[in-house]
Image (cartoon, rainbow over all chains, first blue to last red; front, side, top):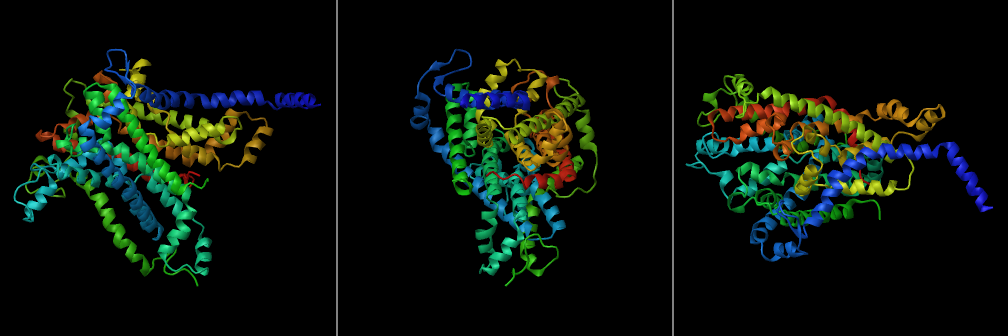
Length: 311
Length: 289
């Protein structure tokens, strides 16, 4: 009896065209899957594999076990003294800092009328459209230590300093400038998503909550706005993590050299490039990449823990 | 008791909004001043660029920096128009192909039922946090292995799979009611026709957003030209402009790099302004659940 049911089921499937359907699904998914595997999945797998080897691009990779990771923790003084602290400082300020800032800005924008909101949102979003390389150009001219440097010119004119400061070559300033520049360009699509999220919260929720005794705007944010737009909060968080680590190279763009002056602006991305594309120690560079992927994954886990609606 | 002060998305001005303007306007100024400065620099004649102390606004605007930029050929003798041509071709192909790939994949992941669907969605969601620069080296090895090194296609093929673009498109297709698709099926439409005549017209805002994001990243991209391409005639406009700007101390460089920065920025800005309402409607479906 069961067999019979199955057989008719199968016949039915054929009549409904579910084999044709399966073929359609396969064809629809094919291009993306192939490209995704080749340029995202395989590189990640390759990074993990290469991180266990010594590889200089010329000879075949030589298996070394966890040696590269041991070297990172015990031998690489540049990594431990400069790169890791710099990366954490930079990532914590630009990531969560930029994220909170973009939420606050989006929330304030939602409190004003449509026309001024659109104009202000466009202005706040626009730095993220300048694009990596030219973000460096824009800020280099502003902070430049020679006669073109606008800030130096301004400070001298006001009598604050009598000699130009080499902002971009000075270990004292570089990191701060990197953080300012990254925050400047961090109001990207995550910011837009949160703005859209805030605007979409059902107005009746607020009214009901005020009847239930909500007292001020802060309570409104905590009890209504954020819980109603958790999905957008999560999307914004993921975008801000990705943006933070993608823009890490800004130190090199600003100072014009890798390594940055006295490693003051050296973050993990620059360290990978330094070992990979300058010293050709691919195995070691891959191990550093894996460490970076773990850091990113950790940050994302945190974001999911905070905002995911799934248990 | 009703809501104190103004509510979200108010229709009228109220005194209680002033405090928000007091924060938003200075922030907006901080965001926009560097851009205005570059804008002014691009039109400054040489003497104003090197005036001391530097002046913010341009006094006697000139197009000389742009003319200079057009006249200068790279050190290897490739004219600027060649780079510009390359970048226009790359951008158009990238935008069209990315839209197509996002629409087909998004349609399958949203409206089709199959075994691996949940897992594929989870993988793509995980890949949202993919940071390309982190695996630049293994990607380089893959590109070389595929024979794409020093090939024009390397500007395009490695950059077509964009998890964020697919995610936004898929979320948007989720909003299309299943009944519409069922009705079309009953009328005898196949998947291809459903995609072209029903899905794509309905998800135009999402596709416009994907187009903008793709254009922005392609138009300003220098990675492929930097790492994969040796032949100067195959490199991108953004790369060419970035070589101009890295010559920090050259006297002509300052004005030209400002002009170059402006050329890179303006198309992004204009396209975004035209499409901004579509982008916002896509973003309201952007949440990760």
